[in-house]
Image 1 (tube, rainbow, N blue to C red):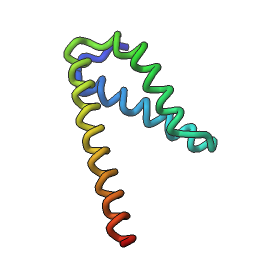
Image 2: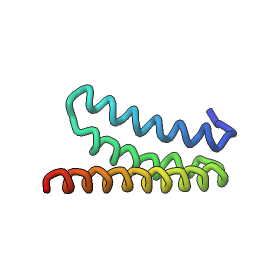
Image 3: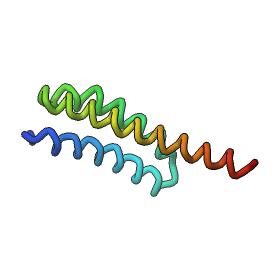
Length: 85
């Protein structure tokens, strides 16, 4: 099945990674390792099947999500360090 919307294709990629995480957490394995393996597999197979616009949109969305996640982690670490002093 081929989707035409860059947003739809990007959402499916994120949901696939989240599904891999949740399934492995339910069966009590490492969700982080499953997400890493899913990301490598999606990069190898899915990225080559996306349209050029979808590839660019997905890459930019992942960069923004990574920046937001980094910022939240640093805020949490800073809060923990400040509260322990």
